[in-house]
Image (cartoon, rainbow, N blue to C red; front, side, top):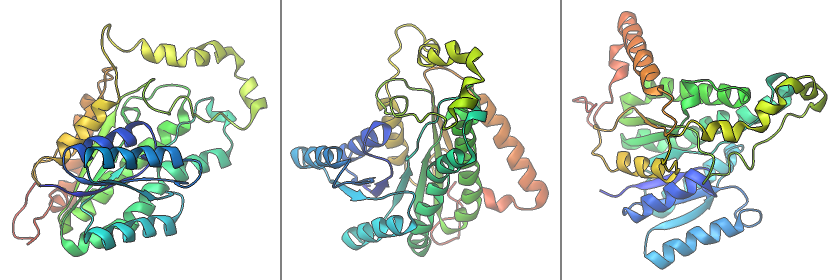
Length: 304
């Protein structure tokens, strides 16, 4: 069954690839981004043209995850046009590359506003509609850095861990309303996304200079990341788009809570398994076991 899907941060990279993949599989897709009439006009036009040329239901909607009003307007537009919104794919995100101390508090606040608070804004816009229907799916594009912490991207790692935690606790609370959650955790990609080319540097260059002993390591960060991939492996972010499409194509109640797509084999699955078991046991001991299960639309039976 086809779904009406909103994707955040779809101008390039994983979001863009996911929009095309989901549309090609018969879903009605709204690829969202900031500045559709200015900075991202070319990206928006290319997606619209792709939909027109292929006959797929793919459109573009303005959505700035740093604005609650923008998130509300985007969701309202989709619901008005389609009569419903089935799925939100939280993909918008930004990368910081550098030494933790050199990032100012304002730098970190800015990153968290995109990577974490942006999720909250979009959920607050979409969840009232999903709750009223008694169904929906929240799919978060997380990161294996939440489980395996690499160096020199400290604020980014912290923001992805925070976003992951927010997704998990939100899941406990929306399960009651028949709303499913999946967290897809990509490993590193050095090609096919704008993460590394558009990464922000620390504002405090003087503090950064104090860490000059690490400069050779930082300068070869992409090379070091590429060295994680086995020989002959094509670490293509299209694999993430395909996994998202596979998961959303599964029947309601059968989708996994987590899925890792990691060509670097960071063993995030092992960390996830330990954390999942510990969380389940913790909630059971609190007497909150029912929060772990997604309720059906009728609330009569559990579907996951």
